[in-house]
Amino acid sequence: MKTEVVSTKDIKNLGPVFGQLSFQDHEQIVFCNDKDTGLKAIIGIHDTTLGPALGGTRMWQYNNEQDALNDVLRLSRGMSFKSAITGLNLGGGKAVIIGDAKTQKTPELMLKFGEFVHSLGGRYITAEDVGMATSDMDLVRTVTPYVTGISEEKGGAGNPSPITAYGTFMGMKASAKYAFGTDDLENRVVYVQGIGNVGEALVEHLSNEGAKVFISDINQARLEQVRDKYSVEIYTGTNLYTEQMDIYAPCALGATLNDATIGQLKAKVIAGAANNQLADENKHAVLLKKEGLCMRQIF
Image: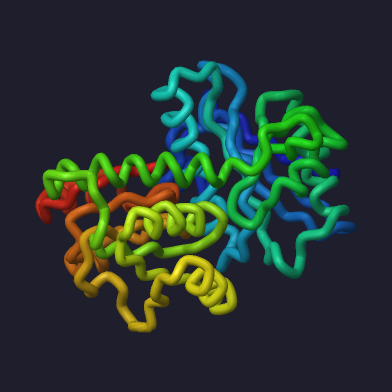
């Protein structure tokens, strides 16, 4: 096992890590590599002022290592805010594993990742995120106690996705009341981008409310499954952002609100479960305000 730990107390802006635009006084960046299992992962610990850094692990086939580093930096910082505003005695952390979760994730790889988490002595507590399942956290739990989101059978709370989706749904209703004068979503046109576990659960709430739901995802089989289950429509166009809609719900990866998309978006409300929905939180927050858009961000 090889672990490279970068301490950031006295060193800033020296190169590809400290010079990253998304680097904002992170305490530790841990690079994990294991040739036997093929594990390549990065653990980002943003701030532990309030307690150990909590945040899920995402497995994704990033275009390059720079994108993976940028993602873990942004995600871990977001978790610091999430813990702070909810009054938890926890800090912000996140982890990314570089690879295709469908073809490259193995029990051996997850166990090795768990060993890296354990080597941090509790400074970082992991959980599930994109590309992960409760069963993966159960596996990690066999080598470290610093993991949450394990199955109910193992004494945990189980899959957190339905709770996240419900929070997104209620945030959406609050935003709708602000924008439209009512939180009734019946007949409101909602585009849900990304239908993983959280996205699907959100679709269920919207369908039960009587909203007109359009769904998009890179997984065609998943789209058809959700369409048939909830009687919603698959978006078949080429540019979702130009479509007439009341609410845009980004539930896939982040940064979909950017220079190219904000000016095209016709929605009055943005309310989704994706992390870091703004490509640049300062610049694009100002642009959204100028466009008169109401946004509810679920970190």
